[in-house]
Length: 216
Figure 1 (cartoon, rainbow, N blue to C red):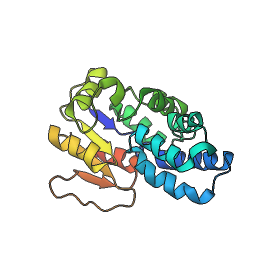
Figure 2: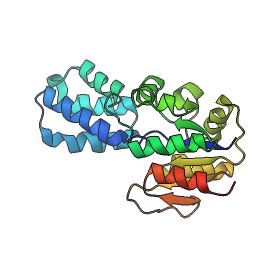
Figure 3: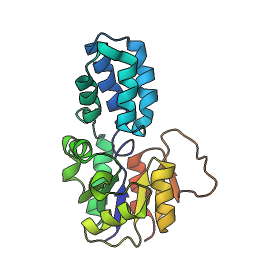
Figure 4: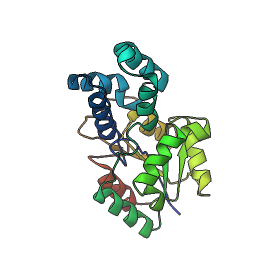
């Protein structure tokens, strides 16, 4: 069975929009300036800033105005309760499964937060498995996490496609393993010279469609 390895954040779900919404609620709930939303999201850096560093930066900025527990609550949830799965993405996954593909999510992050996103959006009923870096002990682009994802469903990596929005984590990871890939551009231009995706798509639904339609 052919294998689709799919990134979660900002690929299958709009993680940044969910975090921005959660951060806006946090600021409003503590009487902080709404204009700080840009600072919080920039400091978060799309989730790539380590949680401890982001918590320390927020604690330093807001001091006694915000309890540390409130900052931890925001970062522990990370907008996981606010993510949504687009209908087009749902249909693309359903079509992939109907065509005989095995779909597995491969994501960096904490198990509790990432699994909450998967279950809250119904992705747990649309994919056959997932691998989260905290559980695996390896992060994308390290090959071990991709191998763990394939092993979790008993499907070999040979012939697999990797779909994701991160040039470094997703596309470089696929390239190192000799796998085909689709980069979800989200309006960006490709800027890497040392490696390239097999295909580029503007969103995950079209990326899944391109992979499924490609010759095996």
